Image (tube, rainbow, N blue to C red; front, side, top):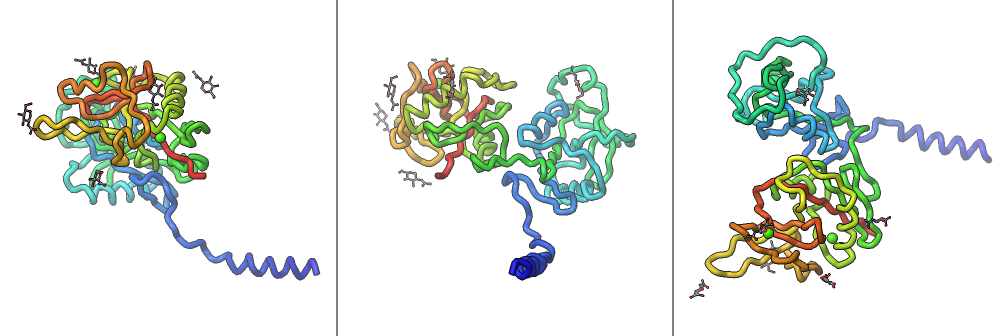
Length: 304
Ligand SMILES: *[C@@H]1O[C@H](CO)[C@@H](O)[C@H](O)[C@H]1NC(C)=O
Ligand SMILES: *[C@@H]1O[C@H](CO)[C@@H](O)[C@H](O)[C@H]1NC(C)=O
Ligand SMILES: *[C@@H]1O[C@H](CO)[C@@H](O)[C@H](O)[C@H]1NC(C)=O
Ligand SMILES: *[C@@H]1O[C@H](CO)[C@@H](O)[C@H](O)[C@H]1NC(C)=O
Ligand SMILES: *[C@@H]1O[C@H](CO)[C@@H](O)[C@H](O)[C@H]1NC(C)=O
Ligand SMILES: *[C@@H]1O[C@H](CO)[C@@H](O)[C@H](O)[C@H]1NC(C)=O
Ligand SMILES: [Ca+2]
Ligand SMILES: [Ca+2]
């Protein structure tokens, strides 16, 4: 009898030995999967000085793409094709080999490079034609981030494509403060890409949870000020003398969301502050300029 069971089981299992359906694996919505390298890629089209790109890829759980095989080059080539207007070079990682210098005269980047080696050194670039060359580090270029599928962070409990989410039972949500400062709309996109959203305070309990979260959080680099973190609410510039109405990213008023305790003397709408934030000293609400860069909090509700 036992032998028979084993036989039947082995038939069932061997019959399913055919290659698995070629479903593409999943990572953040802004990364694409390459089956040949079993890795995810994103071409960042925004022009960025070299000294920042490693950190920017890390925030996304990835690394600056180091060309490891022809498949990486193929991937780079394919991504270039989707963006005919971004020029002919992107930052990629150093593979430790010697490469020729790119011929194109760099566009001088007026932003002050942070250190001597960035000012005069050369960094590795990928070209539109599929070569690997070098160019001066101080220019601004698009760049490619890559993460191997097996290293791509996925938090099963919080159901997000990101690391460092912290669960609070008092609210049933997970939270994270990414180690980067962005303008409000980029912060919005970053949380969204991880499968989360900019934090929405729905109760006094959540206000307390956020106070707890921020009390141990390290300061975010490059933020315009460290006393505020962007949150998931903002207002449209009113027409005429209509009152400013703040709404959450779910299109609720703050009162509908369940928490509308502003920090003292806020919102002050100083020179047109239309984006929402949390004031770290009391965890209450404040308005900020949308285009300034601040740290931010992502939230993901854990479905029961
Ligand atoms: C200077 O820039 C180079 C190249 O980006 C980097 O490798 C190095 O760590 C930087 N040094 C300092 C002191 O920031
Ligand atoms: C607003 O703050 C007060 C005191 O600071 C607190 O008693 C009240 O519960 C808060 N309101 C909400 C909706 O959390
Ligand atoms: C934050 O919450 C944790 C876990 O409940 C607790 O151990 C810690 O003392 C709290 N920290 C603050 C500053 O409230
Ligand atoms: C704005 O306020 C002024 C004076 O308070 C009033 O006369 C005017 O009608 C208001 N305009 C609008 C569009 O509500
Ligand atoms: C947002 O809410 C307002 C008022 O409740 C409503 O008029 C509007 O259609 C909503 N917008 C969306 C995109 O649902
Ligand atoms: C308005 O609020 C901002 C914080 O969002 C603060 O830095 C600024 O000093 C305030 N301005 C005035 C005039 O109170
Ligand atoms: Ca919430
Ligand atoms: Ca303000």
